[in-house]
Image 1: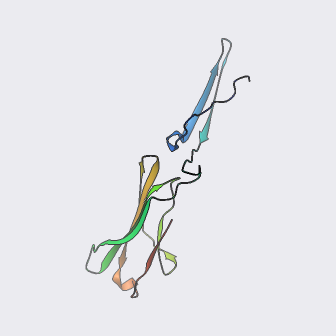
Image 2 (image 1 turned 60 degrees about the vertical axis):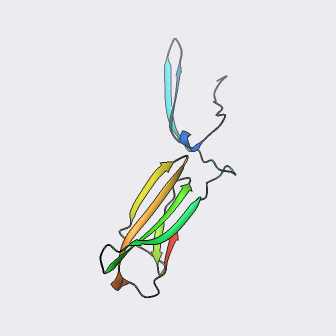
Image 3 (image 1 turned 30 degrees about the vertical axis):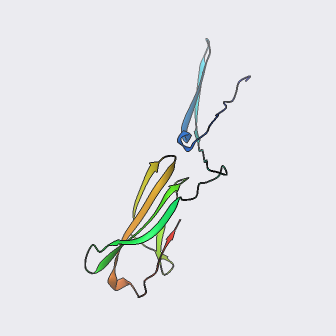
Length: 126
């Protein structure tokens, strides 16, 4: 009980995960595990995106468009969605990568022209 804690000098988001503590003596051994989440930014709270954008990236067919939304440098891993007329798009592809202590996330969806009313305005929600 005398030494029941550890001091982490420079915490980073890389330390997030399952931590195991093992204590041994000549008579016995005890082990316990717990999940720890580290959220670090300029204010020691969640990190806002460094960049965020929504674009029409391509026309996979002559009758449809591909809408993409991405955010870079975000922590913790966010939920990103694309909306059209206040409705979240279905069948959205999600991609998330860990990069330098934060997440780069991207969502994209193919939308048929027949389902759009001009002007077609899409929103990206983080």
